[in-house]
Amino acid sequence: MPRISDLLNEEVDFRNPELVAERTLECADAAHEYPVDLQKVLSLWPGLQVTCTDITNSGYLMALSKENGQIVLRQQDRLVRRRFSLAHELGHWVTGDNHGTSHDVTIGGIPTEIWCDRFANRLLTPKFAVDKYFGDTQEMHTIAMLIARFAFEFQVSRDTTFIRLRQHNNLSILLFADRNRFVRVFTNSNNQHEQLVRNLYSHLRSNPSRIGKVYNVEGMQLVSVLFTNPAVRRKELVVVGFPSARQPR
Image 1 (cartoon, rainbow, N blue to C red):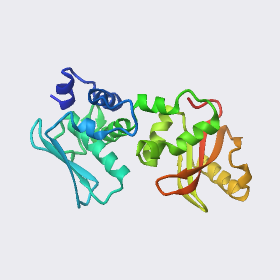
Image 2 (cartoon, one colour):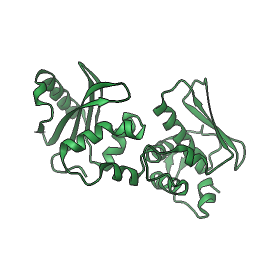
Image 3 (cartoon, one colour):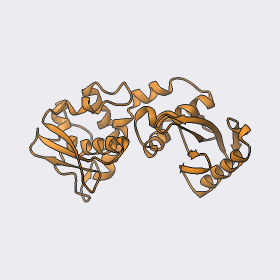
C-alpha cells in the first residue's frame, strides 16, 4: 500500500497529485504557513533521512524498507532548488515508489516524474497559504507586487511561481528584468505574448516614469512594478499580465 495511504489509513486517489500534496501537508500541520516547513513533512516518517552531498543529478530516493529510506540532494544547488528536489523525492516516497528512477511508470495515469513535479509544486505552495498570502485584494499594483515577491516569500523558483500562479491568479505573462537585461520571461501561450511583453519592457526602459501604469494591449492587461529583491539586494522590474476579460483572483 502507498505510504500516504498507510498514513491516512484510507485509499488515496492518485489521479490528483495536488490533492495528495494537500493531504500530506494537513497530516504534518504544515499547510497554513509560508514558506512551507518541509521538516514537518519529514517528521511524518522518522525513518526517512535527508543528506546533501556532491552528486551529478539534483537528488534521488533510496527506500530501504516501508518505513526507512534516504533522500540525497546535491549540496551545491541553491536553497530553492534543493527544496524543490526534496519535495519531488517526497512525491516518490508517499506513493511507495522505492527508487524514483523509473520514467516508464505512471501514477494515477500520469507519468511518474510529471506527477512528482506537480506534487512538489503544490507541497511548496499549498492552497491555504497562497490564499492567505494574496488575501482579498483586487488592486492591480498590489497583486503585481505580491507576485513579484512570491518566489522569495515561499522560497521557490520563478518557474514554480509561474506554474502555481497560472492556476491561482489566471497569470498569463511574467517578466523579471535586472537593470538592462532580461532575467526571465514566462508566457502562458505563444510567442506573440512574449514579444508583447518584450516590447513593453523596451518601452519602460526608455520611459521609466511609465512604470506602474496599467496597459491594455491585444487582449492582455499588463502592469509593471519595481521590486527590491531581498535575495540579491537589487531592484528588478517585474511585469505581470492577465487576460483582460479575466481579473486576477
